[in-house]
Length: 259
Length: 316
Ligand SMILES: Nc1ncnc2c1ncn2[C@@H]1O[C@H](COP(=O)(O)OP(=O)(O)O)[C@@H](O)[C@H]1O
Ligand SMILES: [Mg+2]
Image (cartoon, rainbow over all chains, first blue to last red; front, side, top):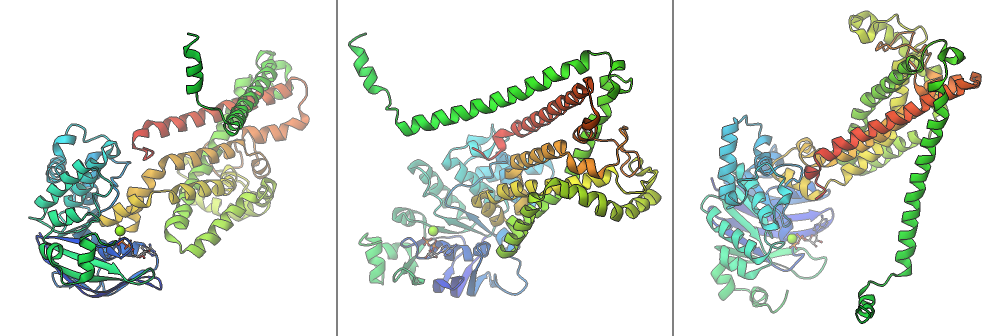
């Protein structure tokens, strides 16, 4: 499954500090959308509002709407726990559970849903998810060893396997390759290419080539100065953002003139 | 050989004074600890020997029994009281620590943490007085009730103590005494659970409790066992509180509320020492040696449990 996300007039606050202001955006299903922009402009903050992960931080709150297939994530009575089961997330630093085996890591989310599964169903799901994350061949002989024994790139793909094992509608990735070597990075980029046939993918990246390689649409965020809120400056097809953007600041950023 | 040596000397790392002082102090401290431990062990063993070798009939303290017959109920009582205290305190400590680290608002958490730490500052005589004079009478009617309604369970068989100064009361007082150290250690290890893994659990759609079960408790496992062992060590060695609370008769029984109670090694030493003479003193020291060994064994078992799953501990 794959869903359309619509964001209306979204502001994000950390207590009194307004970190992101006035974001309007439509993210199409079965596509990859990249967020780029200088550090501290609120990309992570905004990304986390798409599955209510910002609420984990004390004092963080939003104003505005985020609609997933028309349903407001912030509507009354919406359980953030259920939102996060629909909208999965992969973090900057690979974070498989070190106390669990590779197999249990993949199954971690499924077990939460209290779905009773037979051993063979679980085996199938583990294989399907690990294949989906291009990791199966590397780990199929050591599924019962701890996930922390894998390389960084493998750990990150394990995290992706864990996220897709619960069949979310949307997959959010916050700089998933920034802690990885170039080969592992390419492996993840290939994977993103395959995953977009099934999921709506949003990826934050510092790497301009990566944005242009993997995404259909790109959003450029920027801040006027420290202490100012981050804003969505330009949002368009990736090709357009990297060849002839409408806004001067976007052009300066993608051509490396600042940031 | 001679031509190579100047080069070799140049390659050797410079030993800076700071490094040397630090490694010297560390080594010294380690050696002192080992020496202390050895000195204690040697003292205990040499002073205990007469108790094992002498004729039991000539030692008044043993009242004709062999040393083993004398010490068995004490070992039982020591382990039983400490185990009961641990069973009562462990869930409470983990619960309070989790509340402080993951549920309470920051201000409230600080207050609760402070109050629990204060419990640790109370001298054990105070616990003993409070347990014997206040807590035991409060508990006594409850013991009567337990005996009437659950008397078919051997634990509550009775006859019920009239004073309330039972092994159950002693274990409860011990539980309160070991609560602070367990809570403090558990709180520290819970706070150290990596944010990264907590967020991983939450992002998978875990509730707060599920997140704790996935990312906090497994990570804190070793720390919790250590906390329990430290607490158990304190409970095993606690003297004053047990001496004052328990009306002891040196039997082996699992009955929690009866008027005849097992006693513990430290409490027995404290009670019997004033009237001990000659080889009686050696007998008491020998019970101390047994306590030393028991505590050692308990710690070793705990280490073994923690190390068995070291690969999954999250330390790598
Ligand atoms: N937990 C937090 N508490 C308070 N302010 C935060 C927190 N996280 C981020 N911020 C602030 O919000 C702004 C945006 O941060 P972030 O979303 O991390 O930017 P980016 O991901 O684009 O580098 C920054 O000014 C940052 O200092
Ligand atoms: Mg960021």
